Image (tube, rainbow, N blue to C red):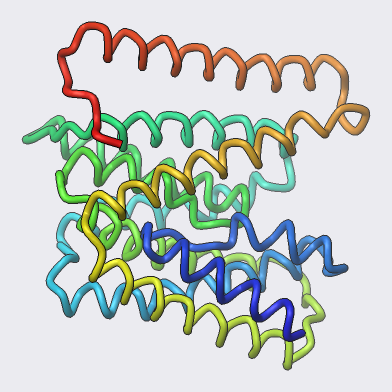
Length: 284
């Protein structure tokens, strides 16, 4: 129990700096420790809600959260979460992972080359991305925060504002996903002590992460986001690659091929962007 709480605290602290919940990394670890998939999802979403609640409160006090822009992403996300949960049991999970992995690649690209958009294009893009975040969050039982990050990378130049508004959106999505799974799933046996320990660790991790985010330089927040997105991409691709033998061969080839094609497209776009010099390469 102490090990689970410590792991939750450390990861929640790191992810809160980037404005993301740590459920995506914690859920596989909870399963490894012997919990059922649904129990692990409940714990992950529970700690996400605790972590992001306190982080959002602290970010809002610092004036980093712009609630109107959060609402533009969050409202369509909330509407689509139940749809994702419903479909969760009806399509191969590996296809969901493929879609999310490709969005992670795009999020890395957006954080490398920040570019604002304005007017009607910004409104349409953020609403569409919000809907996608909610749908995918319902499908995978996580907050799908990297998709919100893409939306806010279109709206803000400051990585701290991107982080803070992503966290506020992820809080609403995590809470909605948690409540939806609670309603749609049968009772999930979780020891009260484990639940309290994990939620408390998530809360403390949110405090630590937000505290650090407010005090480090914006570029360090950006580096943290890039590192988390890249590691999440590798972890999810590893899950897809390890599904050989558990899914039909044709589906496996399609899934791996799509991610590899997306990676090639990402590297090509990155090379073209740097060679053309239209956007100044980030000082990493």
